[in-house]
Every structure is written in structure tokens, then in C-alpha cells.
Image (cartoon, rainbow, N blue to C red):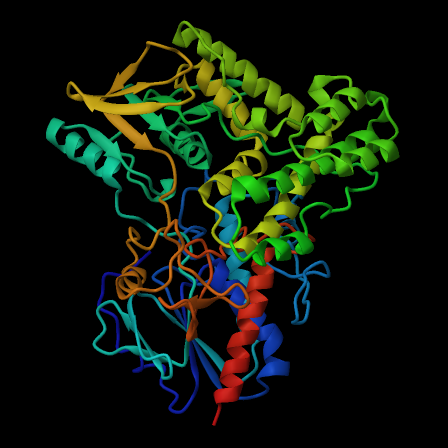
Length: 600
């Protein structure tokens, strides 16, 4: 947990005069991955020279804030243990050495299909951090400063200064890497309006936040609570307000403690994210990806003198790629459900424009059952056109939808879904090179590929039957009036639900203009380059921060969700050529090369 004590003079306990210094702001998984890559590359790029690495973070090195071990044991990871690693493998396209290591399930000696608790993941990350530090050359020292970095100063051609909260002197650095991870944000106009209204009328308003850090004590047992957001933040909220308050599950039945509020949940889609797939690849050829959206297509998009538009230029390639993955698996693993040879379909599919009548006709002729056809638009809007005359009817309809999703995502007969998941991973690894492509794609990816564990959705069904969770539907809106919050949705026209409490179950947006990180806010005020959506613009080659003029700063780097090279996360699924691993390696090598050239 953060310390309230003033920071010490950063040099007092860690002074090695004349030693080059690298400061990494942040000590979580991204910073840990950078230390691992520095250790891997240092012998060839830096030799035996001295180096001080300073990690600045109020939270512990390795897990950082999000994965710290001091959080509720009820909270799980959102991935199977076998799908989480911090180590490179031979699929990762990097210039540095590949140094394999254990994925979470191997390290923890658990079944690969389990969803480990976040505490266990925190312990894994702490172990990776300690292992990476131990692998550094003897004259490379690592120092952790358990404080917040509040300002970054210094000229482009000289040493940088990282100011720590409460310190009288800055931490000098030859290079700085900003790896703060997920950030808190100031409220936007709507949230400020809701907060002011709540204060005037004695209501409870919990804005976008990290659920594990939110004080939920104001949500009283038995009272209705409006919840806007049906993704992973909602799942955490659901757990902490049910089992976290003494409720328990007996089979498929939830036994309340009486301390639970009643959660009225809705969102834009009105449904939870799709369940994690509950089976593994059972043989047969994997779709050879990338096929229609690979490095060549990304290079062509980046080379366009007038730029590109995601909806016009990128999404059609995504559709084509995911469709290829889906139908490759359907034709090769379930040929009895097709009416054409794969080779013939593949040849015709290749020349059909995405979304065209020709493609629709081909699929209709080759795949008799509409349930076997891929409809990405329908997946994104599952309740479009669905209307109920009462909330009671909606409860039954949504329980049937969730049950069907659970059944499908755990049935290998629908293995094209797993192929589409692999296609999504491939696409994500490619489009990260395009920089900031807007929030829609990341939300769509998470909805299809990064949903909750199946057991969580079974718990949701039990809570719905027990009346602890009530569904509101799609297109949810919230208004403040009459001394209460009022929610409506398009799914139950004319109906509404009122409550004296509102929870925004989603993460804050990581824009520079609204982040609560004082260092990044100061950079925003100074005028660093930003994307249209307010992310920090960095050089895709190595993560150097772009100045207002668009040129890479020679001594400042940044990686993570606050940048336009945010990648898919600090840790990844094994054997997927992870963008984050590629970014970490490129940045580590650039840092070491700079320091080696600048050495006396």
C-alpha cells in the first residue's frame, strides 16, 4: 500500500557517483517485463558496465497496484492459468535472446484450466521480478522507491530529473521509461454532473474506478443499486457485494446473507461479455494466421500518404481474417456441416470483398445452417430488435441467453469459436502497430475474447434467480431527477428503475488530459504529442515519447495503456508472438544501446 511518509532524498541511500541511471516510473508487470528484457540483452549490448535502475512506484515491484497480493482472495484472474506467462518463446519476433520460463500454471503447479486467484498471480509476478533482477549483470543494481513520481524535467540533450512526492531533490536519470500501467482519471462532464447531484440529494455515486480499490461500504444491503457496465469490472463488483458480504453458493443456488444490495445492471449491449471458452484445441490444423491482415497489410496502411480510416480500411480486413479463421475450422473439423469442399470455398472466399453480397451468397451456399455462419455485427448487438413488455420477461430472456452462451462456449462442437478467438489474438498483434485506433476495437476484442470465466456466469445466473441481480437491458441510460437516479433501456420500452445509488462499473479512460497521474498531467500541459483520443503518442519502433513537434524524445520512453502502443497487456498467452514482449524487447535494447554509447 502507498506510504504517507515523505520520500527520502532519492540519492541518500542509493548514490553511486558516476553511474548511469535508468528510472522506470511504475513497478508492475510492464516494468517487470522491461527488467527481464534488460537482463536478457545486457550481456551483448552493455557488457559489464555499471548501471543503476530505479523503480518508482508506491506499490510492490512485480505485481504493482492491480496485481498486488493484498487484495480480496475472492477475486480471480480472467484467464486460464496456462494462458498467462511473462516469458518469451520461439514465436516472439524479437532481436534479443529468447529466454523461456514457466507460465503461471507450471510455476504454481496447478491445472492449466483453472482460473487462479489474483493473489497467486501477484506472487508469480513477484517471483518473475526477483528472478529478473537476479539475472542482471553483477554491476547493475535495482532500487525501489515506494513513492509517486510527480514531475519529469530536463532538456532533451541532458540528464532528466524525476521528482518524487515529498522529496526535496529529484532523482537524476540518463533515461526515463514511463510504465505507470492503468491510471485513475478525473471525472468527465457527465460524471461531474452526477456527482454534484448525488451530493445535493444525499445519494451514492461511484464513478469509473478499479473495483478492487473502490469503497463499497455505502451500498447498503437490500437497497437497489443501478450499475452501468456489464464487463469485467461488473464481475468484480458482483463478487465483492455477494460472497464478499457473506453469501454463498450451494450448487446452482445462491444463499444470500441479507447484506447484499440489489444490483440493477445494464450497458450498451445489455449482456455480459462472452464466457471464456471452456475447452482446448482437440487436434486438426490450426488456421494459418495471419492470412488477410498481416505485416504486409499493416505496412500498406501505414504507408498511405493520406492516412487510413478504421471503419473503411481496417475493419474489412479484420472481418476477412476472422471469417477465414472461423470457416477454416468449420470446413476442416466439421465437414459434415458444410456443402462444399474447403479448397473450393477458400478460393472463392479469397476474391469476395468483405461484407459483399457475393460473400454472403457464398457462405449461404456452402454453410447450410445459419448457426454455423459467422456474423460479427450480430455478435456485437445481441439485443438489437429484442423487446420485452416487462422487466420480468427480460430476466427470463437474458438468463436463457447466458445459459446458451455458456453451453456453446463449453462445447467443442462449436470449435470455430476457438478459431475466431485465435484470429482475434492474431489481429490484435497486428493492429497494435497502427497506434491509437480508438476505443471501439479494444472494447469489441474484450467482449469476444476477454470475457469472464464460465463459473462466474453460472454464479450470475444463480444471483439472478435469487433476485440479487436484475437485468436492465441494452442501450441503458441514466438520468438524475426527482431526488433519485433513473435508468431506462431500449429493451423494455417505457419502463424505468429508480435508485439512490449508482455505480459506473467500468475502468477510467487513460487520457492525458484527465489522468490523475501528476507526471503525465504535467507532460500534457507542456505539450507532448497526443493522439485524437488523448493517448500519449510514442514512436512505434521503441516507445520513445513524441514531442509536440512529433519527433521522438531521445531520453524519454513510455509503454502501456496510456500510450498509442498499449499492446494487449503486460503479460500474455504463450506462443502468440505477444506485442507487449516485442515492445519490451525493443525498448530495452534501445535503452541499453543509448547508455552504452553514452558511457564514459
